[in-house]
Length: 294
Image 1 (cartoon, rainbow, N blue to C red):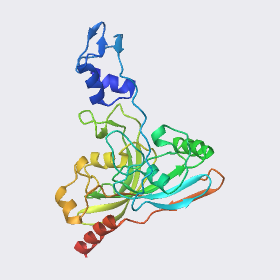
Image 2 (image 1 turned 90 degrees about the vertical axis):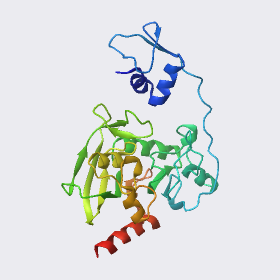
Image 3 (image 1 turned 180 degrees about the vertical axis):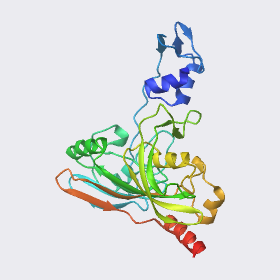
Image 4 (image 1 turned 120 degrees about the vertical axis):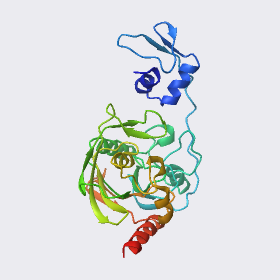
């Protein structure tokens, strides 16, 4: 294994961050400075000098256009996340966030978790819309984190993918990890984390298929990566190889992927379910396809 890949796995760094450590002379392999492409062998002695910890990112209370609170009580806040909104602050992101929007709306959330993601028990990509839950009480944070870990939360998505998956219903069971060459992407990698996606075709068009998708696991970009690996990327998902011509015809500027519903055991007892309608851009894309096929 290369030094940069090994450090990324050992320390939870991105490949580029690991390579930067090697370039700065902060990686020593068996007593000698190591380059990012040097090879790690069993029994090698690796010394790494890490930079000081970064100052925690700050949650800024900022109103978020289109962020709807579908439900809230003493334990949870369920929101409908709009396009172009991240769940929490992160390096390189200076746009709106769900936690910042909730703070601006006067919603107090749990203090459990890292400073910038307190109360966050799961996430959606900035370009993915739909329903998600945030913990307001510490009890809810503990219960919901366990529920996601134990896979008792029923997460249902809809995805418009290019072409027609064969079979029309099935399961994608393929491990996912960071892309070996592009840090901002993920990929099906033999050494990745187990990742399972179930799907069924809800509606077939000439150019695309609308899928009902259920996640068994919740890896970053999981749906996008799995269907791209099948050569059926989400329409509009240029990061994972979607056709830009089709995206323009459909009038979408992001992946057609929507968190349609979320069902779980409420921390105070009883199973609850919340749903989100299609946002305007995704509905427009479906209307275009139906008109073309009509």
